Each structure stands twice: as C-alpha cells, then as structure tokens.
Amino acid sequence: MDAQMEIFWLGHASFKIKMFSGRIIYLDPYNIKNGEEKADIIVTSHSHSDHFSRSDIKKIWKDDTILLGPVSIADSLKKFDGQALEIGEEFAYKDFTIELFPAYTIKKSTHPKSNNWVGTIIESAGKSVYHAGDTERIPEMKELANRKITVALLPCGGTYTMDFEEATDAALDIQPEIVVPMHNWEKDLNPFMELMAKKDSKIKVEILTKKSLKI
Image (cartoon, rainbow, N blue to C red; front, side, top):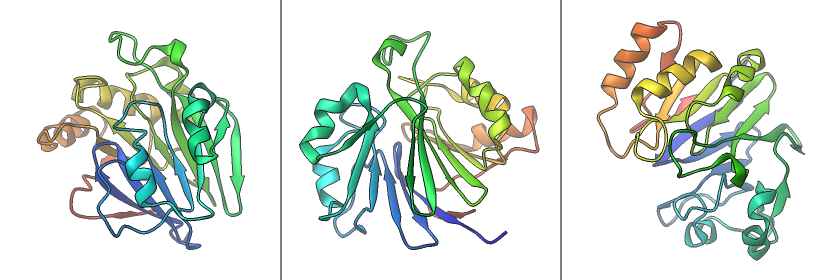
C-alpha cells in the first residue's frame, strides 16, 4: 500500500502530519518556528501550556483551520471556535478520521484520570498514528493491540509521564509496527532504542530528530 502520511517531530510532544492528499494536521503544536505550513486541523491533548499554546496555534492558523480537543478543555477551545470531542468519539474529515483516547498518570499526580485529558488516534486507508499525549502506561493501551497501530508516539521523559522503561513496556502492550519516543526532555534516545530491541525486536524505533517518517 502506498504511503498515506508523513510524520515530522517538531520537538517536545509536537508533531506535524502531512497527509498525502495534501492536508496538514498538527498535534500539540509548541515552539513552532515562524513560517511553518498552515494547519487544516490542530488537535490539542490537554490544557497545559506546552500542549495548548495559544501563540503557537496562532502561528499555524488560517481562516478554515479546525481545532479539536477533549470536552474537558471546551472553554479553552472556544477561543478558537474549536470543537470539543468526547473520549472515544470519532471526527471524520474527508480521507481520514481522528479519535480521542484516554491519557492519564497513575503514579504521578500531574495528569489525573479525572481530568479526562487525551491522546489521539489518526487513521487513513489502513494506516494509523497514535499520539499518546501526557500519560503513563495505562490499562487501556492493551486495547490498541487490536487496532493494529502503525506508529505510536510515546512520551518517555520520566518527569511528568513515562520513563524509558515504562514507555517500552507500553509499546509491548500496544504492539505498533513503529514507536517514536517524544516528550523526552532532550535525553539521549539511543538507550530507548536499545531497550526496545531487547524487549521486542519486531517493534522498530524511529528517532525523528532530523528526519521524517512516511507510512
């Protein structure tokens, strides 16, 4: 099957996904460089300023940009006439769908389950990207093994979310074809790659610091 998407890691938990139909999706845009391409759709996972950055949203905004996020941050979304979705609700847009998935921390108090913050699943023509948002390894991730996730974007910095050990265990639950470590606070990611290879060599690790990924 031909590639459907090209994934660019913009740093931290911020990604740009270019659909091969030409549409552009941003996930948790943050520290966006001036001159970046404008967004067709922006998805924000929760209200922390490094995931819902008004100044960065404005940099990639155009007249018909659509902003999506969870119902739990509906008041913030209103500033951009954004659309609030329930967890599990699907937003269909021409050649792809976007679905919000639970994201929360269990051992840390930084992202309680009661906040109803989210990760994001984008699907198009049999290919899928799961952006986990700010989360620890949660039981719901095991459900994703049946979804045949192509690429999982997993936080691994350890300060507010998962560390390398937990993120690679989460990858074992999810069973994606490819895992991309993110939200890593500039740690050396080679040990993440080595750890994943020891646990399950079939799950490929891509570090997108200086390259993009086509799926």
